[in-house]
Image 1: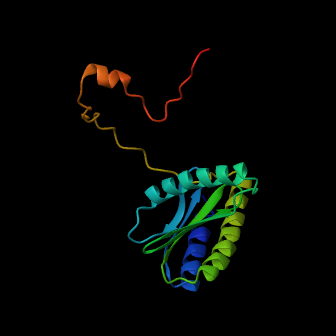
Image 2: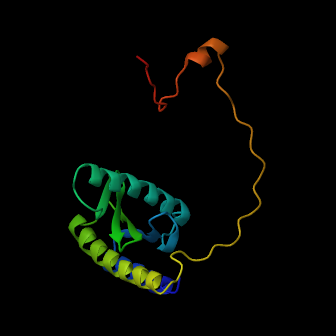
Length: 170
């Protein structure tokens, strides 16, 4: 993506404006890394988790009539994870220390999300791919052995999987 250096510059400027940020990542809505400045955090895994959280947040906002997704904030014992919409097809995820000013985090995150969205949307309009090209994947390793639950055949047959829908006929 030709906008990748510009997106990375925006992430670095954002981290300079909010010193309590410990990482910043721009990703496509389907979990592909566009650019990242995430020391100590694996960006591909964070992008995948962001896509999963985004899916839930979008569904929750829709189900409750709150409109289109704008942002998601998670507070943990050691800090925050904030995700902001970035245009039509990207998101910005920020990692911040617990002592961050949350108002400042939102202000700067929203601004950067808007800027990154403009960059990504412009690149998309020019027909450029949304995510950078990936190196070919390594050959898959053979499947590993898994352990199975022990018990009698009858107890396994009557155990129902928790998310399996059941039907009753009348």
